[in-house]
Length: 360
Image (tube, rainbow, N blue to C red):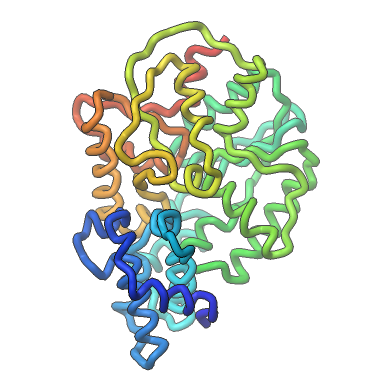
């Protein structure tokens, strides 16, 4: 089941230690098996006759798919490629860890990783924008969603949020690999989005944005309008003067670059522009821009909460090494992970709510 391309990457990665210091899971666990090199070595051993067993499957799920390794690879190899395909293999061989299977059962029951009914954010004021909320934002960061919709209202942007919003394929794709079920989710969502006929699609979660922009075209699934992140779109509104703010000084803060916004979109400025508009003076943590350390992902938190808690705490440690007491984010996934580990005396702020508080 593992493709020749994935095997090539695994065979190359098994010789190299150069990205091990960037792996957030390895930094928390301290286990060599959590490095990209070790995962490549395991798969290369299986290619040479070793057994793909439950232990191997468990190791392949001890990864955030944050792309820090890929981003820093001077030779262009991509460990998440073979890790994701190894998860597909684990599914085929019925070797999925129990903690992961419980999350898959929740998806089957409720459509999302939380096992909860997804609140409806349905609204239609126009078709300038189709706003895709996603399960993480709707369930774990509802105030962020409300603030964002209020900002669109204040800017005079006509927008539509789908009723019974389908999933993007992101959650299943991270858990199972890009199997047929994931591609079917993509087709269902794209058809509903295209039926609205909006001029642009704005996604609350950059993780949803990446799968739409990168993987959908590979599967022959077309979203007819350009896909933009929520932060990038609000930054455009600020630049165009459609959103203006009351001048205020909120002090010093650090902005967290979420994994896929930083490494896929290469967008380091939108969040910082919003922070500036809110009145924050930003300082940089040691790891920022495309080298930013992950704060964890919602999917990984659902089946390995202890590891993700450690990863998020590590991001707060990065903040503590600056003069800031406030962590800023535009990512619903980062917000969910960071919110559980806020140190005493520090504050986590979602920038859409902060902007709404000062917007005219």
